[in-house]
Length: 111
Image (cartoon, rainbow, N blue to C red):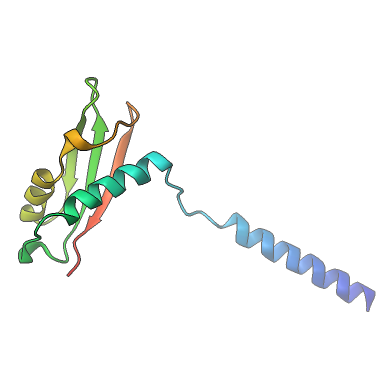
């Protein structure tokens, strides 16, 4: 009986260790989360055209040497969504971030 209980405890310990080791969700840093929140709030204040609803995009933003953010790319299959994102994000109102870091912001327009 003692061997069974020891075996059970060891099995549980190994299974918990395996679950914790496989937790490979990427952790966003606070600056990326804050920048993403600012972009989402800017886009939420605008009227969204029906022809871009349900579309997805990925925005890459970096800080230039002058301290202003620049949009490096907008990856999407919807040209109107690309234009909407470029016009809708006011880069002057974004809080400063780190230089030499490319921030990737996923965007999905709700239906």
